[in-house]
Length: 209
Image 1 (cartoon, one colour):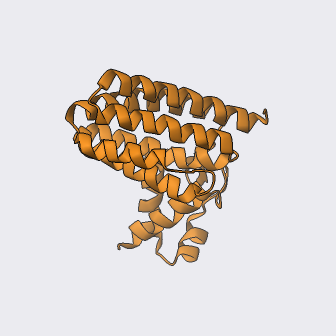
Image 2: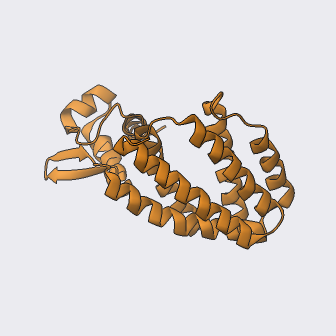
């Protein structure tokens, strides 16, 4: 792995996990020494993170981790809704129905509250199946960028067992609709899921029940 790739991956993981919080200053000298790379690959890594929207230039020589407030989350979900509803509709038209029927069966057997890591791994496989079915590099590239930010959103929101259970059921409906070749239902179920997810995340961040 190239030095710039290593630096990018390390900083991405730390930003997504919260080890590097919003507003954290990423000094070139300090970060290069900490990550064991020279300043040139570090600058390349910071450039990629800036393109992702995860860091911003506070001044010509100061880079900081970007903020993520409720306004940002609402805007992220506006983009997510447009992309994921389109992707679900396309996947229903183009995808292997057996693949999504099998995923729907897995969601039906999943207890996300008891095994959240397994649930998120299943979500990743579901996303990958949609990407493969859509077969549109422009759409999947846009989805990858949105998912990069979603990792931060999920971390900021408190875990909610009831919401996790509802999310599993919602994904089962989406996967089942795609498996049945019903694009309208797949897009509508995706819309409902994203509405519920955003509502739960904002309530969690605002400290409401």
